[in-house]
Image 1 (cartoon, rainbow, N blue to C red):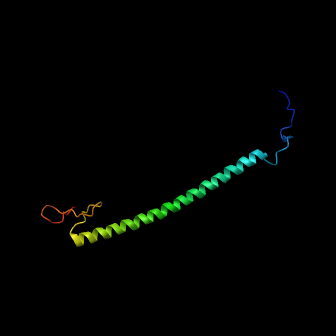
Image 2: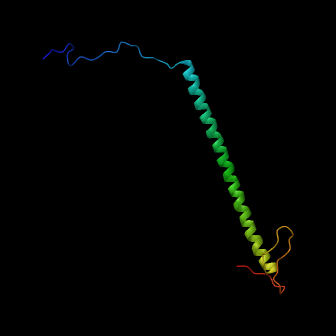
Image 3: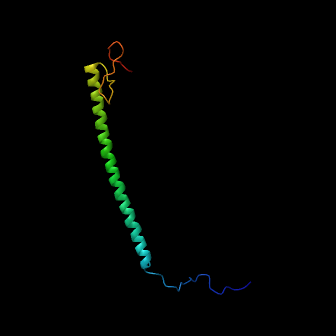
Length: 100
């Protein structure tokens, strides 16, 4: 059996020096990517805030519609109204056309 040339316990030393910094081009690309990601996050946050506001407005309008519907039911006996003309849709007997 042949003898080992390097003793078993010796460490291998890397003589190539390690880089301390990335290249200027790599740094610029990294900075640009991070900046773009931050801009997109800011825009998404703004959109989410707008979405929240719009959903709140939607709920307020839905509540208003429910109140109007109850008011029409009380005043006219129906909430079946033509939205374009404002005409109340009564049945043939002149009664309010009650819809379930």
